[in-house]
Length: 299
Ligand SMILES: NC(=O)C1=CN([C@@H]2O[C@H](COP(=O)(O)OP(=O)(O)OC[C@H]3O[C@@H](n4cnc5c(N)ncnc54)[C@H](OP(=O)(O)O)[C@@H]3O)[C@@H](O)[C@H]2O)C=CC1
Ligand SMILES: Cc1cn([C@H]2C[C@H](O)[C@@H](COP(=O)(O)OP(=O)(O)O[C@H]3O[C@@H](C)C(=O)[C@@H](O)[C@H]3O)O2)c(=O)[nH]c1=O
Image (tube, rainbow, N blue to C red; front, side):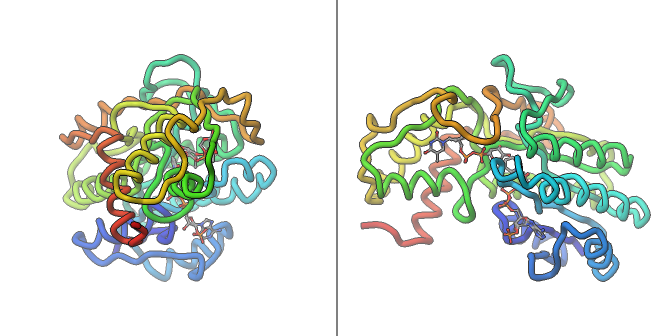
């Protein structure tokens, strides 16, 4: 059985669909237990005895993590460490997700997996410690390091922008943080490919892989592209494109510092799984169309 944690989150929800053809899938939600409690985690693992764990649970409230440090650590560091400990004893495959926020954002080149890390925020630090726990366990765990995740459900930038675009006449969005928006469905699709290979016994799939769309943008241009696509679909966006103002990070004060350069090089993943990741703009169009269809929010 494949166990998916955080199955009501953006990625976890999509995983339930993409993993289904591979065997029995059990999704864990908050109602099944609090994963910040180690004993609860061990009890759930002993109850379900999975052959494969996909950990999509995390503490993702970046600003809140600056003060809610213990909760962020419990989910982002201790949980993966506990999963790895159990997986080692029980010879279980383990898949996990990491973030662009483990890098310090310097320079303009896309980061490669072997580059030095240097998280700026509590969220980034706790996620990095989780990655390190998995790598140190020496169990062949797979870590997909992704960025700017959004989708048709959950709390994410695309849905926030659509809402603000319906309510506001003007918006200021940071334009000096660069990276690649990545839909949750794509992450779930690639994860399913990797899980299938692992279950088949394919060797050499382990460690960190960057997993994002291709191309890059900044949050302001991403916001404009979202509004433009939403308008093209007939969604009542009242804000005009030129009223979405580009601002520097300094003009959008937030508790957690964010990296300016979040670009991730995905060549390792494309080679390993012989696939070509989509351009972020095409993926965004598919995602927003899917959202619009399901929400019947058209005029
Ligand atoms: N979102 C992003 O932009 C990015 C995410 N990532 C990483 O990708 C992975 C998936 O992220 P994403 O799907 O966006 O995350 P979400 O925040 O959408 O989902 C996280 C899930 O974890 C669950 N969870 C949180 N705390 C607990 C707890 N104490 N007990 C049980 N369940 C809990 C949440 O439950 P509930 O729904 O009840 O809160 C939710 O279902 C994470 O590892 C994240 O760090 C990496 C880069 C970017
Ligand atoms: C809503 C809003 C945000 N912003 C800025 C704030 C921030 O720098 C950027 C994106 O906003 P968010 O709140 O989505 O940012 P954030 O929560 O930091 O997004 C991050 O989440 C974690 C979990 C990750 O792992 C990252 O990859 C990344 O996706 O846009 C504006 O400039 N104007 C606005 O009106």
